[in-house]
Length: 462
View 1 (tube, rainbow, N blue to C red):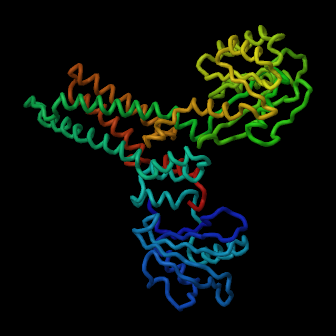
View 2 (view 1 turned 180 degrees about the vertical axis):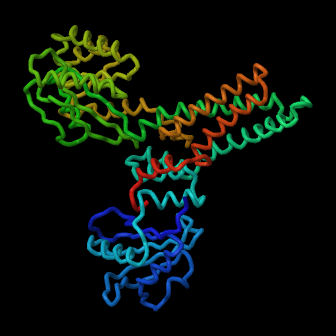
């Protein structure tokens, strides 16, 4: 699959800016770059050392396109493992296009999505899970997702998988060797040590699989549904959390007819807040559709925030408890935060009564922004960030998760075979399957369709 073409693409975001970076990679990258570059000191790029910078101009015959800075990276000591140059030019979209079109005429072709990173993988600069982490790093928009992507890109996950695969491969070799001496009834693989290894692999796989529950929500943001009756302050709370007027607020019950979503980073973790239509009996067709959507959003949410007007508890307390029980029974596994809004209107005895009636209640005033920080801290407590703090490997990629599940299934088959004295040839088949799924994660086992699907999600210049 390794192409000898020289590819070119804009490595910085499209549009005008102070500077833009145009990247070329391939066997002839430096030669092509040299054909359009005129150094201010009359240097030839082909004779310069790797990892050096050179000031000059990009010229098209006698026409000067721009003053630029060219970086040289000679293979294999480059990101792609190939000869690479990066042209830092002024950020005019016209200049960018003129330089790229010139390079295309000189023998480059436009890079496909993710082709620079694909070449890095094919040339052994990155394994597949590290290559995928590059895309995650580019798209990370909070501290937690950035930390996970960096840990994976540095090879934390790869190293853990590679170590397990190597140990299993060693035992697999001994099991396979026994098959060659089947008639002599000899054992080269110590069954006790093999059982211990399988237990250790099973433990690590289960830990990695369990980490996906945390990793997936950190990567994609934790959805939080804000629900309750109409006119209790759900939209005011959303605005207070976001510190901006994101949702329309009015005294008219049922103002929010559709769900409104926005994101907020709390303690380095991304939360996606969903302001829903107020839950009540209504004959308004549009509002009833919004209420139906509310329950759909509760189904999709990781956390549910139930909001009520604490100043109306004397009147509607019984109805409130019935509504709460309905949500608890319908969604028993979802963390539920019960919030009494408009607490600034309460007397001390009313506050005490509320806490007695609903011990887990959090009292706030969304309008006055009182207690909002307490809510943020409570939401953060639902996220298991211990693994992050300890720099443990956290799985965020669905493809990796699927391969880990399949590998665990095969390891458990091998364990069962070992405990029931299954013949070595049948155990060897299950071991090979487990090794296959390990290899799918790091790219030791790949196919063109898999690589096409992975790198199609990259930006062009990466």
